[in-house]
Length: 187
Image (cartoon, rainbow, N blue to C red; front, side, top):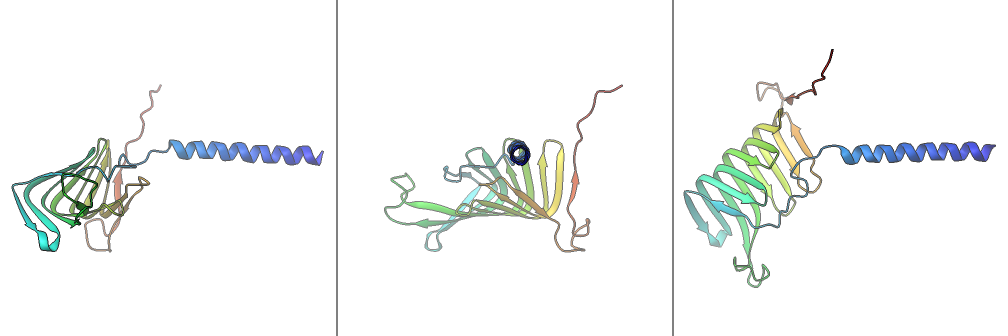
């Protein structure tokens, strides 16, 4: 009798664990989860200044950068790279490897289903992190979250918004959000 009861408890725990795992798998994540940060980066701008000794290039004026399905728009973009002979696997770039993009001035990052805005942005390709700072707004469909800093982990799809120190913005250093609620057809 004790064996049967013990088996029943184990079965119930196993089923509950399986149900919880299924719920976790079905939870929505950022559209940028699994973004290919190894894809080529294409950049257009009104002007470019290459500072080869410092291993950086500065793009200015109507900057538009694209990598896979993600786009970045800003007024100024600094690209930090390394230029190692023989690196790059025979790419046309001749061994140039991009490590980081620093954006300033009305930064907008778009994926197929999300848009993130901020005053400044950092895309760390090596760590697979996108950080937006200052007047941040993350929009997904009709849902909007506002704050002072957004960090998106491209591996996990996790997005974290911070409100910043109290008194810095109109929200008093807090995160604010507006979320839509599914409408019920009802009588």
